[in-house]
Length: 133
Image (cartoon, rainbow, N blue to C red; front, side, top):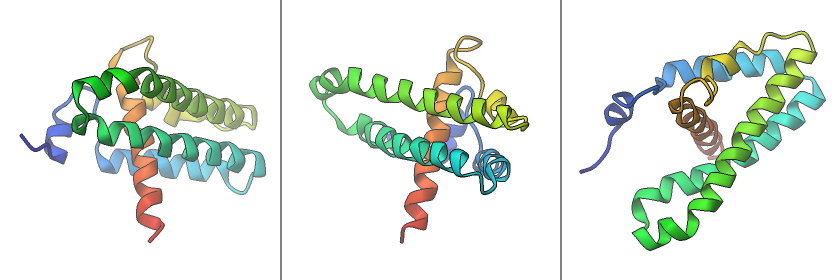
């Protein structure tokens, strides 16, 4: 079976491209030209790019490769969540709402929010990849 965007949309807690675009726009708007926020965003983008490399290859790997790389993938996913949290915390300290972070959700509230956060990280890497042409 070949997956499509429609396959993704049918999954629990998925985000549409339009929703991800809105969240991304909210982040960019709140960061403005703040050098510390931009540095945190850069760290987030680096981590998202590392994470998408794991996720994009998941279906291509053998069971043995998945077993071998699963702990690294999980650690990278954890790091991605931390980077989102750091950026949101900083923006809140600067007086912004960072409502985008609540929209992504927290895994303590629903385990699927972990996947949702990963999805959005992949979106950031996707946008960066398209813009790097």
